[in-house]
Length: 250
Image 1: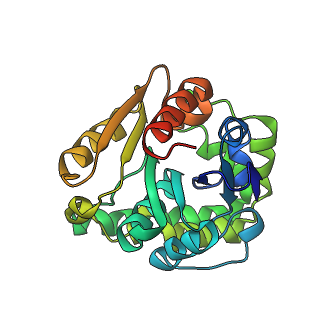
Image 2: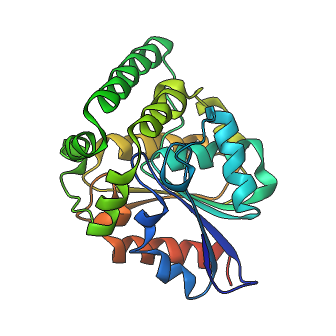
């Protein structure tokens, strides 16, 4: 899905787990005023619900769909955009990561997460998407989030087998950690977290210290939790567009 100004600097928006490209509806028009905006559905989600790709392959597919652009990724989408920036830096003019991580460095922790993701995948398959999504959004990390009707409907429309496959193939347990590669990044990077998302705030600060070859900034969005772009869309959009104006201006 593409809108905005043809020929203007391009920005690609990449959603998180259980979401679809519709999840960006609240903020996409702000970018489209001065940029060409592309949105993608990740494997197992929305229009890509039937696609099954491993983590590296999915990251490459995001780049093939988005082309050369600034990439904005949230959570799962951020993890994929980070891999894209490391493996195909020629496609990424600037990188914005929202509540994303470079993976789990501890092999034992990663194995435990794979088991947890497999358990969640089995639950999705047994109880269906609607029940799972409603329970997923009751987690403390989403305490500040009130999904729009369109966003919630799109999440519930995801087929359970697609979300289950995404957990197994794209979950944090399936991701090879890239902490030791963060110094390879050379494009401008913005790490955005909600001020109440203490876990990912600590991750962002640690990431920033390792990005020794790129201009990097950490931005905390007041009053927001994990999904800062949906919880405080105005404050989040102001911060991200200011960053893009400085580093990938129209």
